[in-house]
Length: 349
Picture 1 (cartoon, helix red, strand yellow):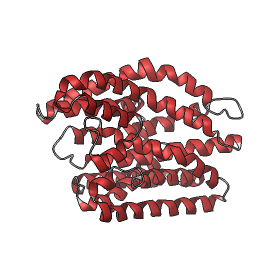
Picture 2 (tube, helix red, strand yellow):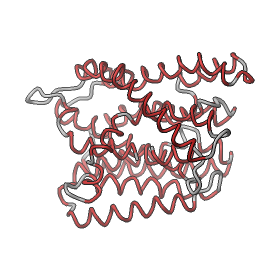
Picture 3 (spheres, helix red, strand yellow):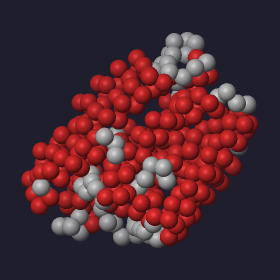
Picture 4 (cartoon, rainbow, N blue to C red):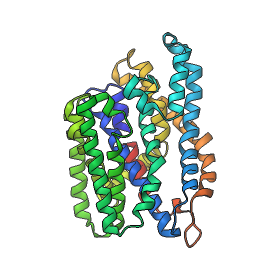
């Protein structure tokens, strides 16, 4: 999250911060796949309707709040675009179509950042059905099958870049599935091998992952051919390294991501993602980058905190009622708070 905000605030040296989206995709694919696998292990089935209602309650209310405020404020601060354009942009974001809107028609504008949310939502539409098929296979064939899907998704991204160019490839859901599938593949692997990872190895993996992210920042310039050819894959595997290291108790990544400030930022990271970009678009042409960053970070944190306290947290009890219960009747989402907290912290990074 921090990489994306830095990029959107035009901080020098963070032109490659958009690779933070690849980290987000890997994290999202990892979390969703693990939740689905755990549900199947506990119940012997996956409640598809419950899954979709939980996702709807998690993602849509904060988004609708942003869009409602946007439709009130945007015509006042960007009158040159016209009310119809703002309504169109809000509709694309609310219907989770920003990814294809950006890829083919360069809309929405001030809500451009919702393209990644659209990609994630498209992934949610079909991924539970893929997991239902995967769990019917032997564990080794699950991993082999998912690895095959990842390689196909990566090859498709590279092929489409050659055919349609950078923009049409960068924003589309079908060309960005590689990161989400990469996270899902990690969820399958950790389910089998996490107890075999020594702390020292996890620390080394964490260092290599951070080095890979630095390389992405240094080499991944906006619209550069290498971004879609291989640097996106490097960012995905850097995210895998962060999650592997975070999964091992007492690794340095695990300890760092368990810090209370990062955990608190992780809790409101979705709201910060929603609110930061329109503020950045409005401010960054008027002020130096350091003032832009201060204003955007303060505004996004305040709005995300208000959204969490007034909207997201009250809805959590309804979501918990839809979360499957294990043998002892405890809600699954409460079973592993330490690791989930670290994963939330990765989202805030």
